Image 1 (cartoon, one colour):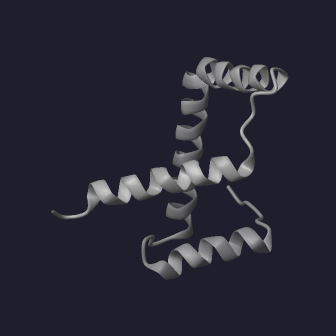
Image 2 (cartoon, rainbow, N blue to C red):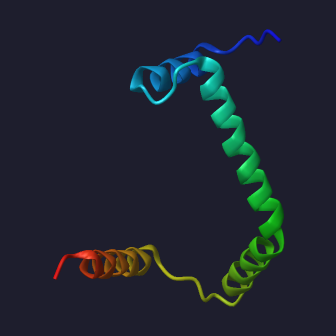
Length: 90
């Protein structure tokens, strides 16, 4: 099989080859397709839960219960700091 790739894709493959993680373009493409397949399988397996979470978010928006960006950033920062603290050696 012969496949023509866009220059951007060829550059990505070359970057992976130069990293030393792969020994051939075929190996890079094979790994990419494995990841794509795994992602598609995960999405198919979790479609119901994803749809429910989207619906929950939509319902919250309709009730005007959305958080502002500043609050979300502060919450994420706190989560990150707690996570780092838990992983520090005693």
